[in-house]
Picture 1 (cartoon, rainbow, N blue to C red):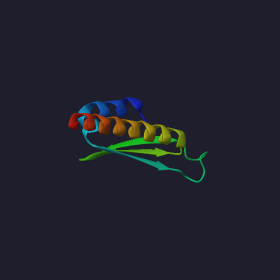
Picture 2 (spheres, rainbow, N blue to C red):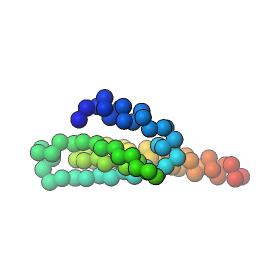
Picture 3 (cartoon, rainbow, N blue to C red):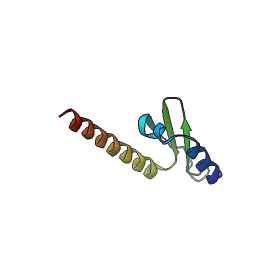
Length: 83
């Protein structure tokens, strides 16, 4: 996997896709972690971004936590606007 190609793909997408759309995070654990190295794949779909984390539970937990905190922060801001 070429990390520079990943950045090129990411930078082609407008930032609003990540801010305004649903982000789905998926964790996949395979049988033998020594044969299948940990990896991350980001797929941009029309209405969401999907991040697939393979054989790396710590990264999955980190991404899930960050997403949950961002959603909570967004909800608090929306409640403050209403009040």
